[in-house]
Image 1: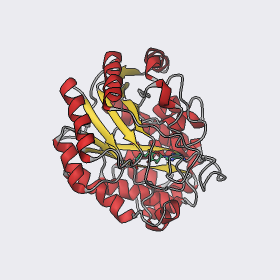
Image 2 (image 1 turned 90 degrees about the horizontal axis):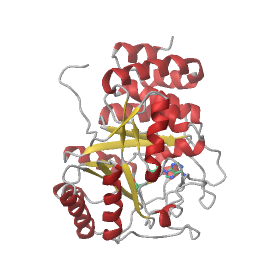
Image 3 (image 1 turned 45 degrees about the vertical axis):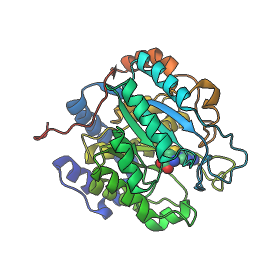
Length: 349
Ligand code: SAH
């Protein structure tokens, strides 16, 4: 048995080299780790799956990340911005479908100044005080994070992408700093956001060493949410020719993350569902407990192409939420109408 797995089971935290060893042989451990992960998820969350309504509100981006289809240099990308009213309409629709969390995600779009975003956050919170607002708008000055929190934002998703600084530099242009990105995450936590970190699996130049660093970083940060998905190439980016990340390894890492942070909210992501038709169901069976259907207006959905072939119709869309609920039921799970906040009891369950 792997030392890392054994340690995780007894509640000890493995060393980096032990994680590397586990990842080197992940196929041998897959079934056992999956079973333990699902068992602990069941113990804490039962069969509950939390839904988040995702609103991709701008495809403009000032950054130039080498993997992302929204990158500034991609002249083939289709750009759009939703108006505040379009965003409010999406939340109205989402609310009536049973969503109690709205996730505003976008490229780093300077059009959405502090004032404009604050207006949108306050607008959603005044319409639906019983709902959580999650932001995912990248790196912003710390004062703005504080202002958005003040305006009522509850949660923030900012994947760290890779915890290894040398690897980070291979994925991003020179203006972007791994140190600043990580400091944003600690600041978001300090400000009281339920904070989400995460990374792509199989991004170019990733190794089991860098992945082990991701796991150590996540243990240190203790984010309330962790989002991971396979890297998927987008043809108009510098990484368009790289192979996609492994679905199996992504599933394995979902299970490992569940063992590391048992109470975390872990989505079965769109990238996982794009890479494999049954990807999100399998993610749930490996310990994921969140799904994020798309609430963006249909007219813009195909324009938010961070990677090729992103699924844009079907069960990731909110209209199909009833179908989604049936599918979850078929595999023994239940979609919940609830804010689904992070919760960790004083004493472990
Ligand atoms: N601008 C925001 C939101 C980015 S999109 C931010 O910086 O946080 C959300 C996530 O999609 C990214 O954090 C990245 O991990 C993922 N992503 C981007 N391009 C991808 C690709 N080609 N394959 C898989 N995931 C990708």
